[in-house]
Image (cartoon, rainbow, N blue to C red; front, side, top):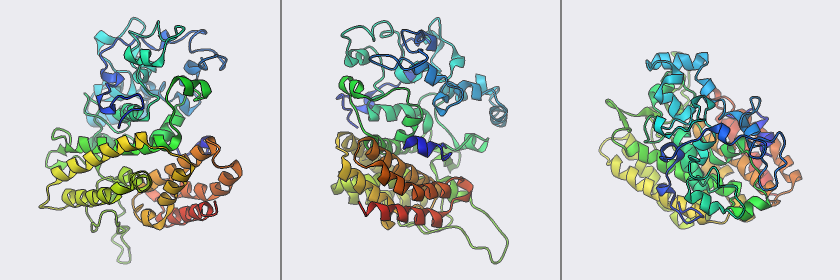
Length: 451
C-alpha cells in the first residue's frame, strides 16, 4: 500500500519501555563517541548485498546508501549541501558555504562535536547510522553478542527508535526543529529558498525503513502499528511546536513572531487588482478567525482531534476549547497567549502519553478514519497543511489495516481511486484545490460506510 502511495509522487508520552520520551537524549547531544558509518559495514554486519541475515536483514547499509531510492535520502543529506540550490540558500543567508555552515550541518549530517568523532567518522556520510541509532562507543562490539538483549543495548546508548514516542522526538528534531544548537528552522531559512518543512511520523518511517518488523523483531522489541505511530507523532509534533513557540529566544523575530510557526498559505495568497477577483480566504470553524489574520499552523492539532474523539473522548471538548482559545490569543490583542500556549502544550503532552498506551484495533482505526473524512473535520482543511496531513493519514490508516490483515486488498483497491484524487488535490501547495479535496474524501467516506 505505501509503495502505491509513494508512486503517486507525493514525497513531499510514556514509552512502551517505561521511559518518558521527554527524558530521552537524542543522538545529536548524547555525549557518546560516534564511530562512523563504516564501523557498521562488512558482510557479517549490515552490508550484505541481499537480506540473508537470520536475526536482522544485514543489508541495511546497502539500503541506506541507495542512490536511486528515497530510502537513501539520509545518506545523500550532506551531498545536497553541495548543489546549486543549497549554495543559493547559503548565499542568501550570508552564512558561507552550506557544507561548512553549522546551521545546515546540524540536520544534514551527524554533526556531533569533534571530540565525539571516532577514527572512522566522516562528516560527508550525511545522516549516518549513529545520527539515528546513537553513538556506538559503548555498544558497537557488544550489541550482536549471543544472549544480548535490546534493553542492554539501550542502556549502553543505543537509541530506542522502535518506540514511536522516542522516534518522534528524534525525527522531529530535524523535520520540525528543536531548541538544540543550530537545529531551529526559521522563516528566514524558508525565505532564502529552503523547502517547506512537512512531516508525518509513520509515512517518513516507511520512507526510510531499512528493516522488517517481522515476528523476530516483535519478539525482541516493542511493536506499534502505523495508526499508533501516526497518532503519537501528531501529539508530539503539536507539543514540540508549541514549546518552541513559547520559547522567548525562538518564538519571536524582532518585532514579529517567528513566522515559521504560522500556516504558509494563510498569508501566501494570490493578489489581484481585478475588480471581479474573489479572495481565496475561507472561514474555518476550528479557529473562528476572520480574513487577513496570520494563522498558526494547526494541522497536527486538527489531526489529533480525529484520534482524540476515539481514544480519549473525555478530552475532545478540552482540546477543542484550548485550540480555539489559543488561536484567539495568538491572533488577537488583549489575550494571554503564553498561558494559552502552555495549556495547549500540556494537553498535547497528556495525549501523547494516552496515544502511546492505546490500542489501535480495526474498529478504532476505522472510526478515526471516519472522523478524518467526515464533513465536521474536513471543513477545517481550508489551508494546504491540514489537507496534506489528512491525505497522508488516510493512506497511513489504509496501509495499517491492510498490513494487519484487518482489511482485504480488494477493499483498499476500491478506495484507492478516491484517495488518488485527494492526492492530486494537494499535489501542488500553490494550487491546492479545496473543493476537489473535500469531494475526494467524501468518496472515501462513502466507501468506508459500506464496511
